[in-house]
Length: 107
Image (cartoon, rainbow, N blue to C red):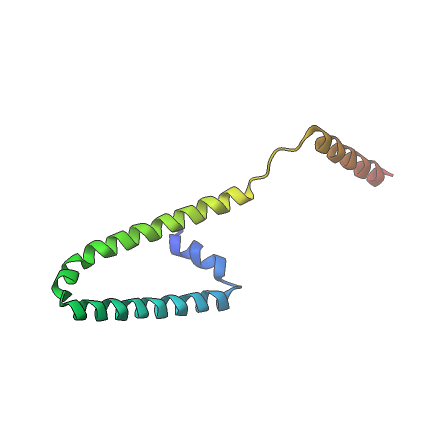
């Protein structure tokens, strides 16, 4: 079976381990800093119990936001691969190059 995670990992398999590691560490450190700031703010205002009730909703919103970012990145990468059609002049030049290369090979 071809799992999603296998395809995701294949992109980083033989290259970019350093970039993947740095982004993972930065994400973890950033998440830790955000959690400390939120905890300090909640303790200052005495609202810990309200935050714990809202935590699942915040998590779902964060998950949906991450999914949207991922889908936009996929659409952008698919769009980069598309090339506009060739003009008449470009097609003529390409045909003449192919014909010239084929005639040289037959000699």
